[in-house]
Each structure stands twice: as structure tokens, then as C-alpha cells.
Amino acid sequence: MSRTLWIDDDGTLRTLDQTALPFERREFALRTPDDCERAIRTMQVRGAPLIGAVGAYGLALALRADASDAGLRRAHERLAAARPTAVNLRWALDRGRERVAPADPALRAQLAWDEAGRICDDDVACNASIGEQGARLLRALAERRAALAGMTGTDGITLNLLTHCNAGRIATIDHGTALAPVYRLHEEGVPVHVWVDETRPRNQGAALTAWELGARGVPHTVITDNAGGLLMMQGRVDAVIVGCDRVAANGDVANKVGTYLKALAAHDNGVPFYVACPVSTIDAAMPDGVSIPIEERAAREVTHLEGRLDDGSPASVRIVPEGSAVANPAFDITPARLVTALITEHGVCEASASGLRAVLACAARRVGPAGAP
Image 1 (cartoon, rainbow, N blue to C red):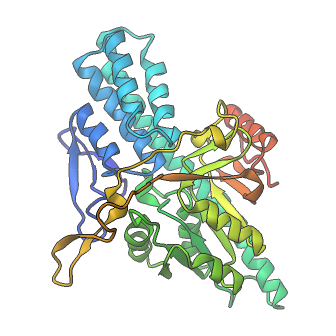
Image 2: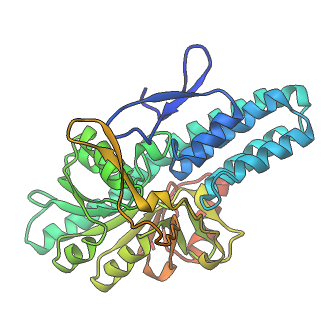
């Protein structure tokens, strides 16, 4: 299947177990709301757009058992609590609830199921547009580099991008967010190379982004999380592009922990720092990044490394001494002042209250790009 989340021939919702990647491509079924909640909590499914879609289907599955007002409220609250930082989960659940609340309870489950399908279709279209908007921005960057070198077009220029965590196809329904422009450029024949942060503690970059890029034939190099600043200082990074889990009303961005450090290094070295931002990740009710709740995950993600031994067998290895305290915040906040631009499905905008208002207005009118900052 080309999509990360799909319905098989017998009507069962299915997806990929991302905890098995990159060593095994394992599919599993989501038959109950408990299945959906567990998959989100354990990160079998991850990525803000994807967990939103899974949450929407979880709501529909819950309504098959109890479509009363109380059942709708309980299912919404339970699923929304599965991961608190990424706003897409609550956004998708709110969208499903608003669609079914006025309806007869007998119709609610099917209406919610259909709405979840529309959320998936919208995500595919959204990410394709982000790919187009971002590719235009990055192509212009490559052309400026070529012009400075006395060349025309982008012949002979390889665009070196750095990304953090995984914001590719498997974090969404299809295409990805931060990786969508990369795929678009690669398909158009623009030479592109990606520096892939390993992204501790769960190594989503080393495991998932590298797996995706390799499958698409995109040149890439996996680096330690702390190597990016040096590469920027050496002039080996043309731009940083990351995804996001929530954008506050003032343009502050919540993303995988470590993003803030990349933004600081980019700012210090004059490297553009772009954030791929579906409109669904904009939380207009959240005034600033300080107000965004930061998910604290289990200590074991830090104390142990999961992988494969040379003989191919799975292994979990402890790397932290017994008795040492561990903190594991899953996200951090990048202040708007460090973000060069937000790349949305409605165009490129400033990471500011006015920039977000403009792009949200475009989204409300369902019109074209808001324009570059």
C-alpha cells in the first residue's frame, strides 16, 4: 500500500508497526479504540498527522460500542490523552466530534468513520502541497547558490539539507511534511543530499528517516545529534528543514527534543531554518511556546538502546548506570525568532502572529498560497 494507514478488503484498519522498522516491515490491525490508543501511546504509530488520523478512526470504533453523548465524550477524552503535545490528535478528534454530535446516535459511528477517511484524504493533499511549496523555496536556494558560483540553473549544485527526527511519509498518511519537498526535488532531478540526525533517544532519524530516504534513493548521511552545528560552521549545510507537532499563535514551534539546538546553530551560522507546518498543527488558542505541554516519556527510552546484533537478533542494551536519575522530555520549543519561515499547504509564511493569521485566513477561504515572507 502507498498509504501508511489503510483499510483492507475485509474493512479492517491496518498500519505499519514503526517500532519494528527499519529491520522488519510488520503490519498490524487496529480493530478497537483500545488498539488505537495503545498504538499511539507506544509509538507503534507516530508523527503528528498520522496519530491524528488514527485517533479519528479510534473515535469511530468507540462509537460502534457506545454512540451516546457520554460515550462520545469518554472516547474523545481518552484518546486525546494518549499523547498531549502534538495538537493534530486533538484537532482530528474535535473534527470527528463536531461532525457526529448533532446526528442521531445510530448514525454516529458511520459518520465518524467517513470523517476519518476524509481526514486521511485531506492529509495526502496537504502534504503534496507542502512538498510543492517547500520545493519551490529550496529550489530558489539552490539557484542562488549556483548564481554565486557563476552557474545557471542548479546544474552542478548539490543542495545539502539537515533534518531532525522523522517527518516523512510514515509520519503522515503519505508524502510527509519536512521530507515532502526533498522527495519533490529528488523526483525533479535536483541534486539533494540529507544530513540525518540520529534523534535520540528513540533514534527516529537513524531508524526511520534513513530507511525512508534509502527506499526512495535519496542520498543521505546519518550523523550524531551533536554533529549538526559543526557541519553548519563548516558550510556543509544549506538549510535545515524539520516538521512540527504544534505551532503556537506567536509562531513558536514544538518539535522533537533537540530541534531548538539545531535552530540555535543555524541562526549562529546564517543557515535558513524552515519548519514544515500543516495548518492543522497551528494552535491559535495557545499564546506561545511556553504554554505548550511537553510530554515526558519513560526513562527506559534513555537508559536502554534497542537494535539488532550482528547475527540479526533483536537486543536491548542498558547504557546508563543503575540508580542514575533520568529525565526524558519528548519535545522542546523553538522560539519564532529562530524560524526563517513556516512552510504550509497554503504557502510560506513568517513564524509570527501576523504570518499565521494570514495563512489561517487562506485556509478558511480555501484559497492559494499566502505568499513568502
